[in-house]
Length: 180
Image: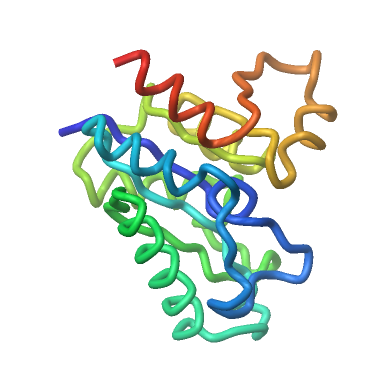
């Protein structure tokens, strides 16, 4: 099995929105993100997405709309020369008490089950504390990017815990590929 790289979606791959990404037309990749996924894919890494999408649970958009948003993302990644091996979604609203909503480890456990491996030591890249906590809950290598909510997250956590931080997904991907 190739090395797994787990990416959060909003704020890492595409622009963050406080009002949710509610349609395919609202999904806009961050500069260099698609090329970063392509670089990881071409280096033999298995790239997957783990994303909280509570807009479904809140009734802001349907599961079918979320699928259309993800089709747009997959098509854009393919057009850049990359591949996403899977998209793992928590569709629940924050108060539902599910086990898959990050910072809980449920999505990470789903990925482990789907690929028949442990995420221990594997990179998980996010822009929020919940991404870092979910990664650490399974022993993964938690990586923060400063895009999306990342700069604010870094400012809150600096000095509290050791952080591996990169300016964006492109820089993180470059570092991961160089470590091969």
